[in-house]
Length: 419
Ligand code: ADP
Ligand code: MG
Ligand code: MG
Ligand code: MG
Image (cartoon, rainbow, N blue to C red):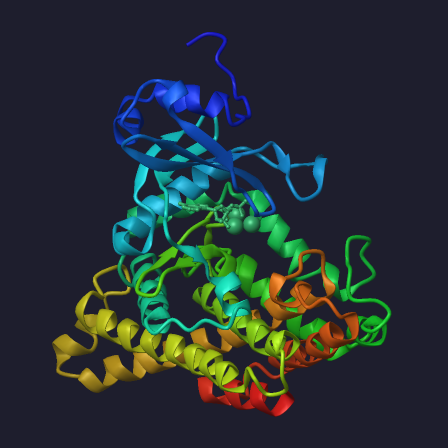
């Protein structure tokens, strides 16, 4: 249609927009904007998020802006990220639909996605700051990681489909570049956007920037990030991308999706659990009040990995039908042991990657541009700095010694020893 162009919506124009989308209007129970209520709730760094409610129901409209919301129009960012987010969501939905918002509508021109309004779900990060436990979180996330990463890899995908899909996501250049710069590069030199709790972290941050072992380690992780096209990743799987209730878990916001190393998603989630762990001392009203809660966070990290690896092992046995169809070499030749050895060697590599990526993800949240609310919400800067220094120590260890931990219990031991 001639003359149609992208426009950023506001709380009024978004109602007119959904009124014109027949299926969406049906969900809301009205085609009349005047019978709708809309509010903008985006708390992320990048996009607009509207909740639009009508007499019959509610939807979320997530719209990309042509610039980074956190910084302003001085930092342009392509609208196409909504396209990558939609494509990632639809691929994840093929295997884990119950872990995502239901998907209603995609509009490439306006760079927006209409989806289920998750309620009474709350962002996981906020609940971890409040000290709340979620009995099913580790199981849900471990399965989500295994199902999406296995099915998004050469172990399962048809070879032509994998290559076509890699080509599609290879265009998500700018969002990958954000990670390449902000996670793997800028925290390790005197980049203008870096920030940290000053002056308390001046020493540790400067020490990091002159630490050759850590810089060599992070460079190796960046190289894995850019070269290891193992599986379709979520790409931004922190605790702000997970919404929970007491019994449910949903994963949102995969706009950073691309074909990368499986350990990147796993490491991102583990890193955010460890950041939450080190922040707990800053949230205590009385000494040791959050001690057992901290132990729950570490157990959750342990269980995420165990559930991930158990689920991955089952998929390896039952659904290894992609280009890496090694059954002819192993199971079909009566060599179950060979198949199992292959699995364990593969998972060992994923674990080492996850450790290194977790380290990089922790460090960037402490001395890079974007920080985490877990730490930022600790009002007293001395108290916050005490938590941050410990988390930074762990991040450094993970980057430098990623091959030495053996298993997930090595990581929780280290966290405990540092706190
Ligand atoms: P960004 O890419 O800008 O980080 P997100 O997709 O993370 O955007 O959404 C920002 C915020 O909007 C989330 O933290 C959450 O509070 C809210 N939100 C996003 N999607 C939904 C949804 N489907 N249901 C309810 N709230 C949502
Ligand atoms: Mg987000
Ligand atoms: Mg965000
Ligand atoms: Mg996002």
